[in-house]
Length: 204
Image (cartoon, rainbow, N blue to C red; front, side, top):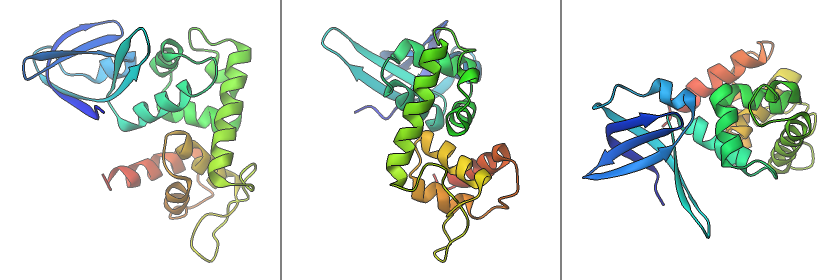
């Protein structure tokens, strides 16, 4: 319904940014990472938004990047992860770090975030991995990514983790695989993700 809001940044407090558009102030719940990237009060700002509608409330969430928004939506799709925990995770970790943790099965990294215990961290990793597997189909777990005849990644652990991480960030697995396939698969996973995000971002 609301893709983004753009206007004057009129108010900020921990976890909240208000952007005035056409005389209407939109209160956006957000992360500390997004707040650190916002300009000074009175400046023009833009946030990608997600509107949550429940029986007892309507909340608008705002994020500095589409990756952060996509990661928030993926996190809150996990059972037991509400908006508060999703914002807490993305206040501590970048979307890329969350994606890497999920792709590599590193639940310990998630326990650094307020409100995330060991069991919840393990559930987040497991469910996000399952979501990615479903996107890839039956051969997703331990994807043997190499370069197939179609030029799409088909097995190599670094490439597999990079594609999986990009999928956690909301990119279609086929798009992620075709982009990762452009780069040297011997590169570290973090570098493959960085290069792939740069390539994908240039298409927007």
